[in-house]
Length: 194
Image (cartoon, rainbow, N blue to C red; front, side, top):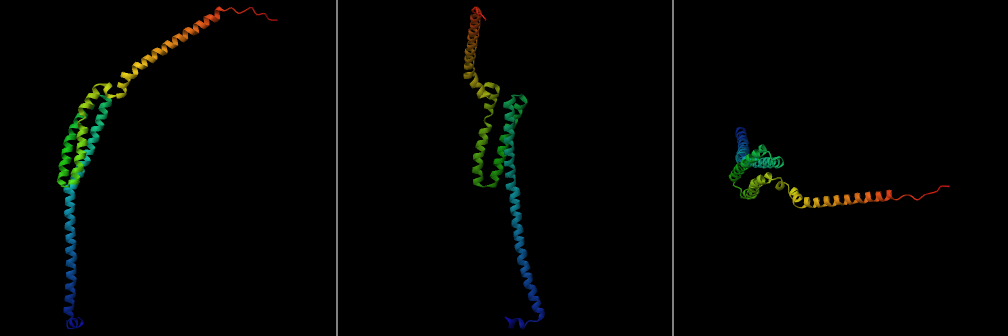
């Protein structure tokens, strides 16, 4: 190899060295260009597929929280304004659920879709409680099971206890009055003091 290079003139040697540097620069540039292209493709996939799915899931979570909050206010207050807000938010929940499903289907990942189908079933079941919530709010006794238990079981017993307590107090008062009258009717014996 040394004999081959010895036969070259300095111009040829410089030209060959420049050619090798250009080939290395071309290889590095092509590798960088391919990496940049892959990065752009992955970034486009994230922006067009993953980000909308993530945003849709966050919106679904937020919508479920809004429905739960408005339901809680309605159950607590029973006001028509809270009822209207609860009904509106619950209707919006179905739309948000459908939008989330569409965004996740665009991903094409079966494991994500399977996990989502379980979540969607729970959210739909939560949303179907609307009629029960309206029924519970119409009757305070149904709204608060403890009140229903008190009205059905404890209040009659409470009344019996109060009646027995009243009878006990009355008989005690009568016994006290009788004892006082007995004490006042007895005359003290004549006591002599020296």
